[in-house]
Length: 364
Image (cartoon, rainbow, N blue to C red; front, side, top):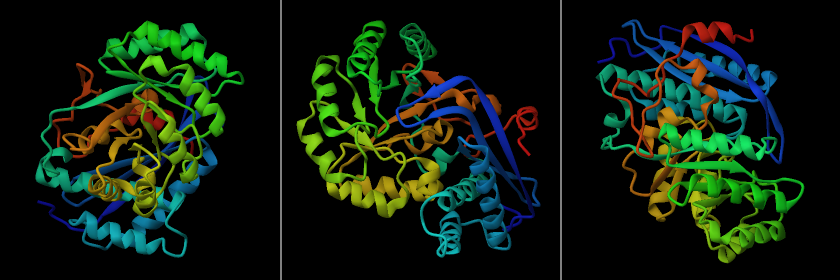
């Protein structure tokens, strides 16, 4: 058990990891992947790990400051109860607001506390949550708009060879015909037995989404992701009624209250809560419960180390997204097998940072 129920000390690192080439989406272009690494230390020697990501060093430094503020706010609290700590963290950001960077900082502290709880009991997170440990379907994510068709095909087939059961690519080229050609080329390369997803990052209007869906109706997409602004619930509800494929979205939405509205609006077939925008593991579990009550499907956005455990055996669960940008700062490789990602056997939430990488990519 936890020998000390309060945090003895902590450290926060800010990292900036350059991509080999810019990753272009319809909304913006990513050049570096920046991260906040948080570690909470107990007198017993246990360490609780968590990280957040951003795509701008200035925002990442703000996130680090917010994490520092929130850890100080709970440093004398009993951390053996993650849900109670999460409520305290949320009270701390009342005057800041329950969305945006403050909620992301809440997520980091929450994940680190869950990591400590699981480690104190000597079990992985999925056992702590009474999940079966059977593994969850996983897709490889990439397909930037700046990639050539040849590069897309190499990436897609590499993910399949790695053991992923699907591939997600970006759409949103200046000419819709180019998007259609790229999606068709990928489908031909990976074959009908591999799931294929197209993600527009909320960059289209209704008419463009309909035209695209009609053009690729024969390609059996697993889902179409965020063609429209997710908060335009009426437009998405109308689009959903016209599509022959599921409509997914929600990765940029914050907290259970927002997802309650999304689920009640019946505007999406699949919600995709992101761990850091959900407020961490505690917030994510609340959102999953909201979806379960309405029989709405859930697929998790990024954080595949933790997603492999939260999604494991979830009755309304779908897929885990694997984007390899954060692999270089981790020690433990992912376990892909037959289109699934296996949850880790080690105690904790599944995060072990490579100390040499933390030093190498330090942005302080």
